[in-house]
Length: 193
Image (tube, rainbow, N blue to C red):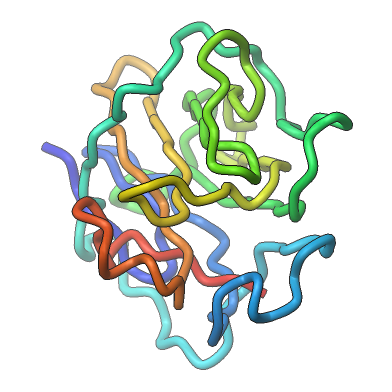
């Protein structure tokens, strides 16, 4: 059984969870905020209520879409010096429903370049990693671009050892294109600072 997400937990798979270090909410799109060329980081959110015990709302699964490529390289940084974009760092922790850290959980991440194009021949903006003994992960990449019919999003697969895979997508708050995206789910919004 897959479980969705609250503002502080990023992804949850039964019986394991991927909890994001939540990011503070932004009020405008990234371009309107003048974040182009600046690093966007994951911080503890301000003004959010305390996270309930790990029995909160489960993470909504979403499609991997037509652009998933298996066997991505193992790496924490997806940055490419030949690819422009606004850097972003996403951190978090994979937890069980009892809030116990889950080490060696697999995270596979992929998204478009800044122009909204997927690399379907290589592994640009694609990679996987395993959580440390405390269930922590760290991903350095860029803010993905837009393409027709879709808002900004990052694809994620999470798999705790010997458990089913949860595939979902993460969305950026206050994006004008969120409401027009047929897959957009507000439960999967990240917050940015």
